[in-house]
Image 1 (tube, one colour):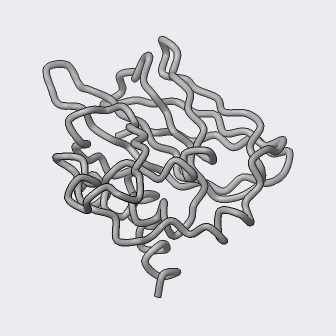
Image 2: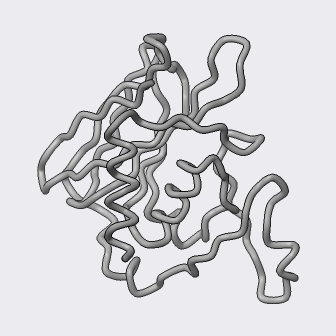
Length: 174
């Protein structure tokens, strides 16, 4: 069942890179949640709670370093997304939930810090170009936020697969 959900999400992304409004802040928040935090304290305002618990075994099987790269360009209506944050996260059941909710127009609560250890961040240059090096082979969600002139920030998500030693180009555009 999860395979079909991820496959559906990939199909939607590949068919046009859905753009959705993100949470009020385009930055990625990492919040340390102690065991004594009440459940209502765990969800950041404006975000929905995660339904998938952090899958320790799934992340333990992932490598953190490799020799693959993802490069690309962020655009909205042909205009470059300069100086924008780009995140590259491995596809897991945990990240798939966040991607699915983003495609549905919802922002989930911040990711577990253990998941953030596997997420790479970079910024686009003046032309909207970006590169993330040192990735292990695998499938990734590549996401960025771009704000049109006079508009609200938008999130663009794409899913890509990269092999060992390979460089894959992805266009985050609408």
